[in-house]
Amino acid sequence: EHEVCIREFAPNAFKELPKVGPNGEWDPSPEDLKGRVDLREGYRVCSIDPPGCKDIDDALHVRPLGNGRTEVGVHIADVTHFVHPNSTLDEEARFRGTSVYLVQKRIDMLPSLLTTDLCSLRGKVDRLAFSVIWTLDDDAEIVDVKFHRSVIRSVAAMTYGQAQGIIDDETDNTELAQDLRKMREITRKLRARRTAAGALTLASPEVRFELDSETHDPIDVRAYELKETNAMVEEMMLLANCTVAKHIHQHFPHCSMLRRHPSPPQSNFEPLRKVAEALGFKLESQSNKSLAASLDLMHVPGNPMANKLLRILATRAMSQAVYFASGDVSSSADFLHYGLAAPTYTHFTSPIRRYADVVVHRLLAASIGLSGLPDDLNNTAGVKEVANGINHRHRMAQFAGRASTELHAHVFFKDKVSEEQAFVMRLRRNGVIVLIPKYGLEVPVFLSKKGEPCRYKLSADGMALSADNKHIRVLDRLPVRLSVETHGNHRTNLKVELVEGSSATLETSTVESGEGAAGKVESGGKKGGAKRASEDGGGGGTPKKKAKKGK
Image (cartoon, rainbow, N blue to C red; front, side, top):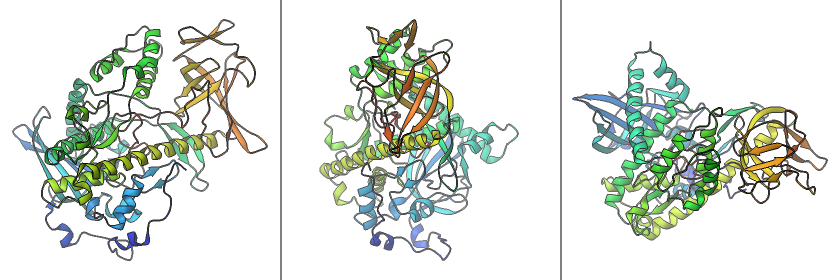
């Protein structure tokens, strides 16, 4: 489904993997360390990831240099040390394009020995990395930057919650706590500078499922809570991606693998503009900076969710972020990443799960004289072909992830009834689309049964449905009751009923058990579930992993 490759890796791919001990143990050999900068001593490298993360592809360090200078490092798993150009492993990774993250499993781009062990930057073990190390001044401005192949030993592999707890514990004055607080201070400055340049803060309904350890059925689901440590790590990854993008483009102006997020056409903002005007706000969308400023002003008294809902609508207006060959775009002005307000951008920080990052690692290595440039990356046409393939696989992975979320939501509501608050996101002549934040569900629903006329009438401006002195407007809060009905042919439908004095019953379209809830409301229902904000500010980009840091 969605062209996701689930077959086993080719036998020759396993033959190319390094030999490990009888219990899976592996340490870099002297040959592996040749030419690397040793960062194992004197550097408190650490990683911060979601709970249960095994494919740790990034780690960080910070240390004071004196005279108002600070050294900051981002260390990324050196996947290309193990995956050589045109090898079977490389062909497998290129074909897959990306790892696919479903609710109950991860479909890896590379064999698990690499993704969760030899490449994963786990704590307390020696691992090979590609490092970007900056010298920053007191204003977090870059004074100097260096690129190294390195060997690191992470002192701590933390979750976002653990790192946040250390930062917030005022009694914790360990060196690690001081490092994390310094990193927070620096990344706040970096984020403020990006925001001032026009970077957007968008939103999407993200949820986490808790699965039964035996049946793998969902037993709980809740909205994913972002902590400041999420933003802290994201900011460091964005700095690394921007820095590498600028560097490789300077060295390979015609064959760099970059990522752009085109400015959306103004027509994309019309749905958001109509909602904003109905609430008494004026949307300014001439630039990313004016859009960001407008969204910051849109707060509705008595509805604390309104601003987030408006940002979700803004996310829907975004164009798709895509990979491209630098020589395939006529002007560097078109390199712009609109969501991040970045003039040049790429993906460097997740080579365990994205083939684009593998390509960028090879470009970076060639630019600093560590290796030659593979033939297929030595011209615009070759990089364009790779980029097009990755873009396609990336979209398919998105669709698969959304379908998995919808399927598990369906299973979760089977044999249970839940009453929750929902918010109206869109109106149609025969129904509405509501977002239920607790479950991250955006459900197309009907206001009348099939074949019967709808007693609700849509206003001329499309901003209200009215019937019998009842009115439904965009962003209205609606109490709803959710349940799943199963029919004799094993088909199910998610039933959503208005609560508190309403006799109207809203139902999604019927979908087969095991399929995504892909309902349709007056041709306005969106298949594939709620559109998610991109990990890098683009419309619909894939998150690093389920509920993982935005990179």
